[in-house]
Image 1 (cartoon, rainbow, N blue to C red):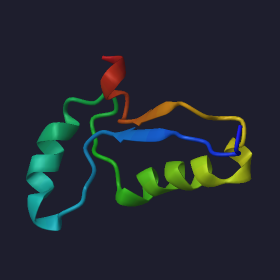
Image 2 (cartoon, rainbow, N blue to C red):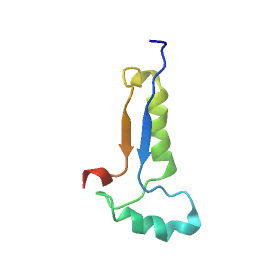
Image 3 (cartoon, rainbow, N blue to C red):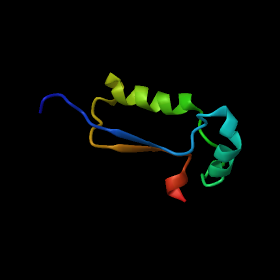
Image 4 (cartoon, rainbow, N blue to C red):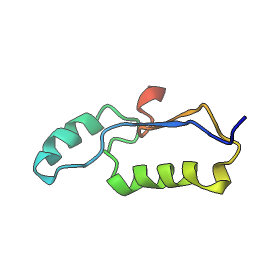
Length: 71
């Protein structure tokens, strides 16, 4: 009623530390597309959700997990 929207992003494995790439590669095997995400891929979803293009989305959890929750 006050113009506030609330959404969450649920990422899967994300390459966040270069020295842990092997760990992220192992976690990536648990996703449908068999790879971890780059941080920019998660950021693009967040940017979309805060943009006017997502103005009718509220109360949603967006899984950005390479299909992990689908398997």
